[in-house]
Image (cartoon, rainbow, N blue to C red; front, side, top):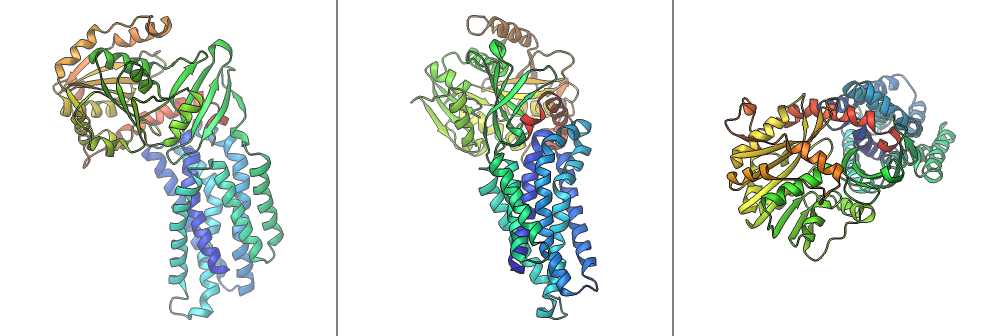
Length: 523
């Protein structure tokens, strides 16, 4: 039983690290600095646990060590039950206090107690195993071997069993219940407490399945927010949320707090980026017959081009996005649409050079994954285009931190020679907005964007006015543009995008945490 316990608790340690990162992502994002905080706290807690466990074993009889050995998982499970109640109301204020500092504190809240207690089991088991192994290594090698094997199992369980199918909250409760069960089976003075921990974890999971993240909430403008569906997945938690009420209601698809698309009360797309990418690409390639869409979102762009008579191929890494788009946004692909569930980088490598348009809308976490913004990736995308083909890209733009945008533009111009950029109109108080980028197999084709006219016949008058204001920012960028002076070209071998984008990503995440109510973000 003692050896089985060290294997299972080793698995729990790695499970908790992965699940805690998923719980924290909607509040703190996925920037390099935030991950530094998570990993630093994790390693410090493990080191402290190893040390404290070793100190505890000195000059103590084996029966006391054995009691402590089974009490530690029980206390860990009990703390996880408490953490499940605390984090939905604590993570938001911590994120608003400071993303980096808050990430350290949130990691301590979620991980410190269980990681210190569970890592202390290793030296405790070494002490219990010493009579079997003698004084050579006192069984330390064997103990750390089986503990590490358990950790490998924990990674697999978290990645393939817990994260894709359960919310972060329920995943933590499953781990708490398992730890409580270990304590109960181990016996000793903590058996009653272990049974109480197990019962509390099961009661929370069964009697309150939605948790604090499932109820209604209101934002600072007193608008109601309501989560109507959640889709856990290996690529983030998708949530369908209704904001407001009556004619002004919006239904928005979120992925870890990042809006993928939104529809108004009448079922029309309400976010500008889908309209602008569609209008701009259709203007550049008015007779498009074959379209490649990288990133499904809510299915707006592929549905629009299938309705125009084009053959559409959609590449989406997350099958649950298709479920959400169909269940709540009316996406029903017809016979002219082919769905491929794969990573876009892999898919474009074998792409036929016969596409009229390629759309790139590949947001995850706080931006586009960096391997999808390199010179090699854009070269593969260019290889998908026919002679008159164009590519339309949705990106973030932060007027205070232009370094990542400039690097992306430098990379695009290296591949395509010329890029057209439109900045979505925004109030001065909101520095973060969408940037719409267009490139073409024949760079001179981009000149036609200056002739684009947005008419209320295709979109609502309000949307037409917003898009016209955005179009006024149109500018063309080539390799000689002063904007690109000193900007690096992103490659597979040298890609500093994570460091360049961290300030902009954190600015975006701070804005989201200040706008979206905590119960909507909480997983």
